[in-house]
Image (cartoon, rainbow over all chains, first blue to last red; front, side, top):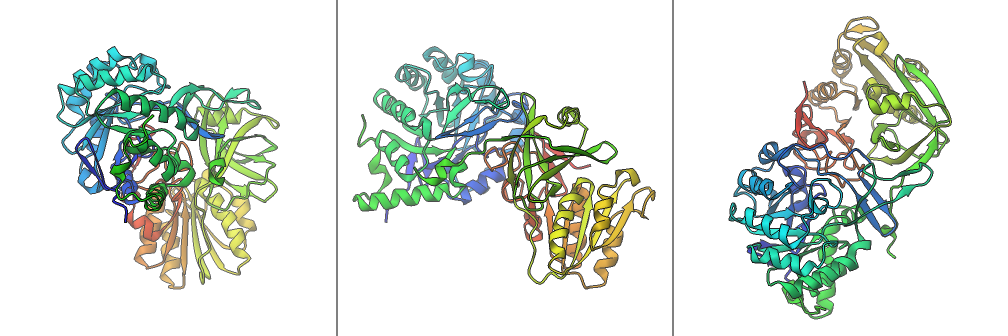
Length: 304
Length: 272
């Protein structure tokens, strides 16, 4: 029997699979449903200071070997969302807040006003590639910005703080070092890559309304794997690996490279919400065959 | 490569084959394509560089399908200005359909507005199972009643209600529904229409211990259970996949049914 439980920056997880931000996660009850389907923890959909409608549809598009999205951070704003994400004990697993901001001051505002003790941790996203004013489009993916934003949030919350980074922000090792130096407790690596463009040639138009979108799914996986490797060599704080994890073997690969847990997003599109159980079953089966007894034994054993 | 990794949901650019007037301000757009949909399912329609919206399927003969759409917003107004031969993107069908329940020989269907269409398609399929069908169609007034010609062709006992009494019985669909339920012979109730009408129908069916299926409409972006826009409180399930048609057992656990829904941002809005 494989021990799937693990720990991430003080959070106790029943298994290392975590719902990634932006997939479902709009409501408390949807988180509860995802945890019921086997997720070890979950990250809420990112919340901004103001209510946002997001980009017009289509917001998502499946491509060969991957997936594109440009949702544009639709969310109800901090006030309504604070009400939505209350009574989180009912969810049944750690709930990680996700916050976004246009600058360090807005991140500070979110940390002060939106975060509550009900959350197990907070993930600050500095890496969205398809929403003007936020993430990499606002230049947040530099070591300087990362340091400033991390510092401002750190001053205002005692929750474990994770910084979510972009695979396109390089050198990624310098960025995560800046986060670690300013008090981050973990790194979420990585956000979607790009943005990319795909046209529908019959329509003579891009498939996503916004025109371009972040690329996720299997196409992102080798890039995410390399980022995890770079980060593992650069910092001591734990890494939440994310980017195309679709099977238990993918999760094992990320953990062997240095991730302590993995987030799942696009794989839900391919395998439904059963994907959390599929992944943990596939991990257990493989580890049993290979003579492991705990997922914790995997972390960093094959770092490159 | 694993089969499920080859999944994608790219829209097909289909030309509008013909356009028919359905009622005042409502047109049905037909597409020559084998959609293989079942009653109660929906498609996503994309107008490039404008937006993409879900629409229930009004007709599906196997060779062609039709979408009955009123011009009420920027999207549907642009559609109304389109001509035969113009192309739009279609993906789907998505969602859970109405289903035939074993031993249900005597059923009532209650439709309001566009909700009449999927029920009419369903009734056409049920008829071949020699079931007795009561069909109640309600609207605010006569010119808002949809699909009367279609219901006239159905082998069903049809009832009309209008709030102002301009056609059929004056009042709500619940009056004829309760009279039929009181006979004690009804096995099943199906309903599709405005949510408060559906809630009243569901409540009555529950009162008379008759099982039902209800189509629950929510704001949808993706149609395949990823974006979370249509997750309902109580179950937390996205109704694009675990719906739109739900059973009465499910409806009991959907806390927001008949109470509130969410806008595109996720903010709650109460039903009036």
